Amino acid sequence: MNTVILINDKREFFALLNEWEATKPKDKKTIVETNDDYLTQREAARFLKISIPTLIKWKKEMRIPFYQQGKIVLYKKSELMDAIRIVSSAQMIRR
Image 1 (tube, rainbow, N blue to C red):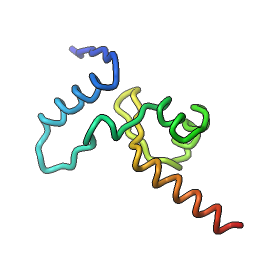
Image 2: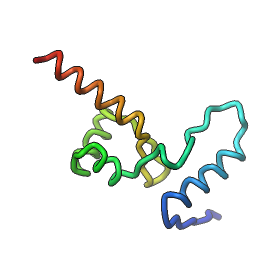
Image 3: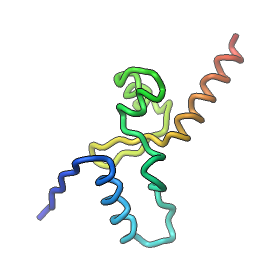
Image 4: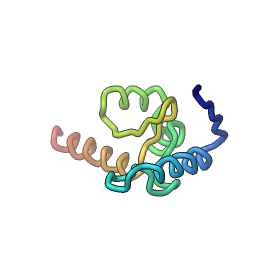
């Protein structure tokens, strides 16, 4: 029998994810570092100053790194900044 868990907000998601991570063997690197490092799709789109459909398109094209647990998609802020720097420097070279 499967258990259904309803998650109300980002903090609750991270608390559950950290609890789950704690049950795993410690030899693997954990994904979750702190709550503030990760952004939801809406937050990531605002941070990058793009629309949500553009963000989803970039995700599907593997232009930006993301983390997905079921239907929840998160983006690490530092990785988004790195991806934007790479894109910006590539555009500068083309000019």
